[in-house]
Amino acid sequence: MKRGHLIAGIACLAVLVLTAQGAEAVSVERSVFHAGNSTYRVVLSISGETVSGITESLTPDMTVGDVSLPPEQFQVNGQALSLALISEREVTYMVKASRYPAGNISGTWVDLLSGEQGIVSEGDDGVPGRVDPPTTPAATGTPRAGLSFFSLMAALSLATVISTAFRPAGGDNP
Image (tube, rainbow, N blue to C red; front, side, top):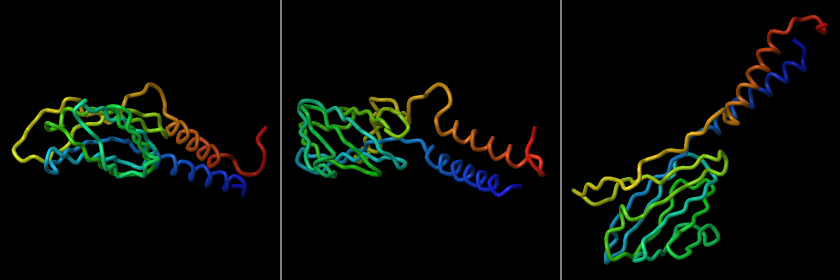
């Protein structure tokens, strides 16, 4: 095998490994915990490394405060809380509400790296003995038709490595 083919094969394997690592599925789960005096702590847990955006829709009687992100990474606009995440695994914010907010907050997320999007699922609500069905279905993402960029790159890399490995030795092919 020629030296150039060996380098190309190693480079293709490196691309294959890197793209397989980036293909991790993302999901976002919300948990609500009572913090006292009509105040609740909302915890958003994000699986996987991602650059994403989350929008939480609140009811008119809710007020947002103490977001765990820097001010340039969130915005409150009326009843919508928009969050910009870069590799965060957890985000918290406080809600002041006249009633228990679990089930009254809805949210969506989008992974800006993969284009995947979904609904923020309901997690543990922190109240012992309370069992409320989630108001939104738990979703880890929106199914997409066709091959993803990562699977296409992996297949192309594998095909290059195989064709390089089985090329006859001793010179150019006609």
